[in-house]
Amino acid sequence: MKIAVLTGGSSAERDVSLATGTEIARALRANEHEVIAIDAAGGKLLDLDDGAASGIGRRPPGRDELAGLSERGLASELERLPAFAGTDVVFVALHGGAGEDGRVQALLDLVGVPYTGSGPLGSALAMDKLVSKELFIGANVPTPPWLVGPVDAGEVESALGGFPVVVKPAHEGSTVGVSVVRRPADLEEALARASAFQGPPLIERFIPGRELAVGVLGEKALPVVEIRPQHEIFDYECKYTKGMSEYETPAPIEPEIAESARSLAEAAHRILRLSAYCRVDFRLDPDGGLWCLEANSLPGMTPTSLVPKAARATGMSFEELCERIVQLALERPGTPREHWGLG
Image (cartoon, rainbow, N blue to C red; front, side, top):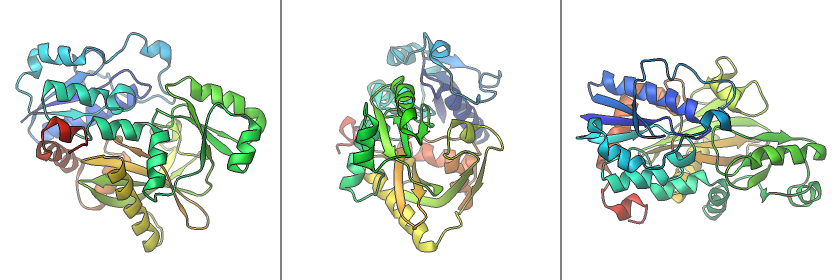
C-alpha cells in the first residue's frame, strides 16, 4: 500500500509533529508499505532520515521560527505532487493548528483520499477547549469549572472559588502557553501568555491530584496510563524532555476508578464526534473524583507516547498500532457527510 505521512505544519507543535511523523513512517516501512512524508506547511516532500526531526526542544518553536509556514494551498500542492499520485491513504501526523482543528481534514476530503483520525467536525470540536467543555457537561463527563478571559482576580474568586487556577489558550495542544496561577498578582501575565495564541484564554479551576490519560482505539478505551511529571502539571518540558516524567500502564488505581476513566473517555470520544483513535486527559483528585481536562484528536505517536504505551499494555506493538489506525481509515465510510460527522 502507498501511504503519505502528513507531518510538520506551521503550529507551535511542529517539532512534535515531525517526531511523530518520523516514527510513524518508520513503522509503516517496517510493515512493508511504500511511504512518503509530506510537510503540511507547503506540501513539500520531506526526507525524515536527514535529521529534520532529530529532537524536540525544551520549549515549542516561537513565532519567528514559524514565520512563513502555512497550510494554505495544501490541496493544490498535493494534487500537483507527482509522488502523491496513487496514494491509498494519508496518515495525518500533525499536532495543533490547521492540522488538528479540521482544516487539513477538510482539504483532504476535497482531494478525495482516505486519511487517518477524525473528520473535520470532530477535529474542530476537540481542538476548541471551550466547546469541548460545554459538550462534556451535556454528556455528564465531569470537567473543571472555567471562565473565558480576559477576567480579573475578583471574577476568579467569585466564579471559581479563588486560586490556584490554570490559564491556557483555548485552541492549542501540548500545554503550549499554559500557566498555573497561584496568586492574583500573576494572573495578568498568564492571561497575556495564553492570549498570544489563537482564541480567547481559558481560566480553569486547578485540580490537585494525579495525572491520567486514556487512549481510545476503534471506539474502545485502552488501559489507563498514569503520568508522574516532575513539574506540577504535565507541561511541554515534562512531555518531551527525557527523564522529566515517569509513566505506569495500567495505572495503579482502584479497578472501579479505572473503569470509570475508560467509560468517561469513550463518552468524550463520542460526544466530540471523534473517530478511529484519540487520547483523553484526566486529573484524579484526592477524593477519587475524575475530571476531564481535554481530548486530543491526534495524540502523539512515537513509541514512547501515551497511546502507544497503552496499546503495548494490551500486547499491541507500535507497528501493529500504526497498521490498525491505517485500517480504520480505510474502513471509515467515505461520503463527505460521514466524514464531517453528520452521517
